[in-house]
Image (tube, rainbow, N blue to C red; front, top):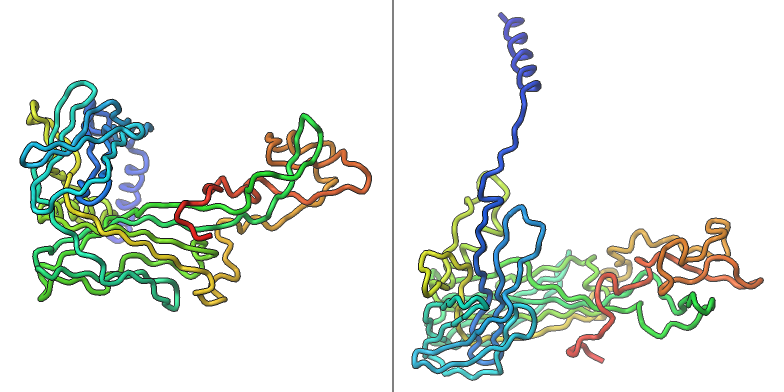
Length: 386
C-alpha cells in the first residue's frame, strides 16, 4: 500500500508537470475604458492646484494622458466663480485665494470635448495649525512626528501630504571638461558635483480622532529616515501640508490607502471600487475618478542639518555610489587608443583618455559617478538656505 501511494503521487506530479498552462487574461486588462481622473483639493487660503488626466489600461505602457485645454473653475453655493488657468499639460492653478470659511464650494470642469463635470458641494472648514512638527533622533534613524488639535472639536479627520528635498554630491568632483571640437581640456563652468532631489510622499497619511476622548492628534509618526540614508548626508528638508477632512473625504482616502498600501498577502483586504465625489453632468452612469474636498491648508517646513546628527551617522553615507571606487589615471593601457568620447559616447562630460602631451595625465570615472544631475538637479531650490 505504501509503494502504491508513492507511485500514485509520482504519477500525479508527472501529469501536472506535463499539462499545459494557459495564462488568464481577463478582458478588463485591455478594455476600451477611458475615465477622467481629477486630482485636487480646494485651498481656501492660497493656491488651488488641480490635475486632470485619463485612466489607462492595466497592460498599457503609456503614461496617463493629460486633459489639456479644459475650462476649470471653483464655484461656491452663491454661484461666485474663481477660474483656474492651465500652467502645464493637464495642470490647472488658481490665483491666491481667500475663500470665506463655512461656505460650500465645488469644482466645475468643461473638457476640450465639451463634456461637463462637477464635484459635490462641500463645506470649507478651517484647518488647525500644528502644535508641533519635529524630528527626533532614534538609535536607528530620524523619526518625524507631529501634534495638532482643534479647540472647537469639529475637526476630527486629517490628511497629510509632504515632499522631501535633500542636498547630495556625486562620488567624485569633475572640474574639467573635454571639448572635442577644440581637442582641449577646459575648466568646467557648470556645477555637476552638488545637486538637490525632491520626492513626494508615496503613501496616504490619514488619521481620525473620532474614537479618542479629545479631538487631538498626539505624536503621530509621519515619516522615518534610516540613519544611513543619503538624505541625511548634508542638508535635509521636509515640507508638510495638513488638511482637515469631512467624513466622506476621509472615508475616500481610507479606501485609497487600503487599495494601495495593504495589498500583497492573503490576509490583506481585497481591492474595491472607490467612489469619489466628481460626476458627469450629462452622463450620470459614467465613472469619474477622484475626490475634490475643500479646506484651508496648514503648511510647515523643517530642516535637518548634518551638524545636528551624530558624526557616525553621516561619516560613511554613500548610498547609490558604492560602485564608484575605481578612479583610473590616464594615459592608461586599459583605454589605449580611445578617447572618452569614443569609449563612452558623450564628449560633454568626459576628459581625454589617451593621446595627451608627455607628462599630462588625468583621473576619471564614469558619468554616473561624477554627474549628480543624473539623480537630481543642480539648480538650488528657492527655499534652500544660503
